[in-house]
Length: 267
Length: 267
Image (cartoon, rainbow over all chains, first blue to last red; front, top):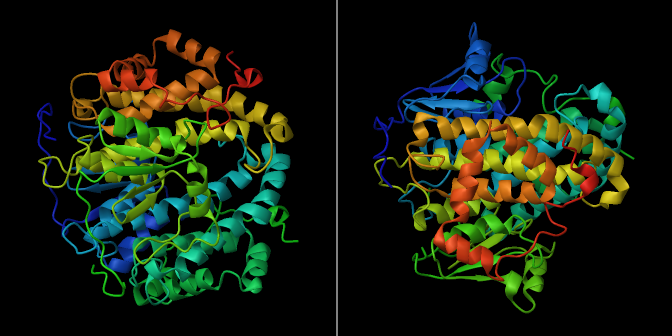
C-alpha cells in the first residue's frame, strides 16, 4: 500500500534515533509499560514526565485543535511515542513498534516471526484484565467523575473483580506459563524475555499496590506461582532493578493502580 | 529471536491457506470485525458460528484444561483465528495479522510500512471507546451478572457515556478523517480503505442499534459528518453490501450492542 495521496513521505527512523515518550508526569500509568521496555533494553529515550513543561506537550497534542501532521493523524490520549517522523499512541501499539527494535519480541525475518502475534495477544489480554479492569474498579461509572462520586459502585465492582476476574486472569497467565509454548524459564513465550513479560510484571506490581491483601492471599494459595515467579524475575533484571531504584520510576498515586483500603476486599 | 527452546518449528502459512474463525454463534460480537475484513477481501474462510458443534470448538479451546500446543499458548477468549499452525486471539491482534495479507493495511516492505502502527492505533481506540465502553454500559459492575442485576449502574453509566464519551470518540474520529494524514476520500488513513475503517463502521453500526435515538441526535448535529459518511461508504462496498444482506451476517442480540430502550438517553 503506497502513500500516494500523502503530501510527504515517511522517513524510516533508525533504531539509533532516540525515542521520545510523551506521557503525564506524576504517575507510572500506562506510560510505565513503555518505560520498562526502554529501560530493559538500555535504549536512548526522553520522557516528558521529567521535562520542564512536559505536561504542556501532552496537553497540546491531545487538544481538539491538534490536527496531526502530513503523516500522522491527531492522537486521542497518551502515552504517545515520537520516533523520527512517526508519532503513535496506544500502549500495546507502541510496544508492538518498539518490541522487535529493542530485542523484546520476534522481528520480521526471524524464524518465529509470527511469534509477535503471540506476544501482542498476551499483552492485550494483560492490559484488558489487569490494567483496564483495575482502573474501572475505582471508576466504574465515569472517568470524569471523582472516585468519591462512584464509591458504592466501586465497592461492588471491586468485590467482583477480586473474587472472580482477578483469579481468572492470573490463572490464565499461570496456564500460559506452564504451557509448552512458553518454553523454559520464567517467561511467557518461547523461553525468552519479551515485552509481554514486562507488561505482566507491571500489572502484578500495580495490583500489589492497589489490593495488597487480596494479592497476598492469592499468592499464598500457590495457584499462581508462575505469575509471581515472573514478577520476581523481572524485578531482578539488572537494568530493571537499577531503574526501579532510580527517580525515573515514579510512585503510584492517583493513576490506574490506586490504593483505597476499602476496596481491598480480601475475604 | 529464535524459537530454540521450542520442540517444533512454526511453519509460515501461505495467504492462500483458508482462515478459520473460531467464535460464538448467535451474535455479531467481536468476531464481526474479523468477518468484515475477510468478507471485504473475498477471503476463503470458515466460521464456527455457522458450523454444527462450532460452539464446542470455542468452549474446548477456552476451557481451563486446554494447554495450547507446542507453538501456541492457551487462549482466554474468542474471537480466535487459526491459520495453518498459528492460533491467535484478541480482535485487534487478529486484524493486525490479517490486514497486510488481505490488502487492508500497509505490509512490510511497503513505502509506508510503518503505517500499520497508525491503522492499529486507530483500531485500538475505536474498540476501546466504541465497543468496550458500550459493553460496559450494560455491564458496568460485572460481566458475570445479569443486566437486570446492575440496571441502576447501567443507567448512570449510559447517561455519562452518551453525554460525554460518545461525542468525545466520534469527535476524535471526525478529526482524524479531516486530518491531512487521512488523505482523500472517506477513509481514516492514507486515502485507502484499511481494516480500521471496517472497525469504525461496525462500531457505529452497533451503536446505532444500541442507542438509536442518541446516534440520530448526534448525526443531526452535523459535527460528525465524516464518521457517518465513512459508515455509509463501507456499507456500499460491493462485497460488504452482499455480506450484510446474507445470512452470514448475524442479528444483534445479547452481545456487545444491546438495545435496552431505557439506556438510550438521548437528551
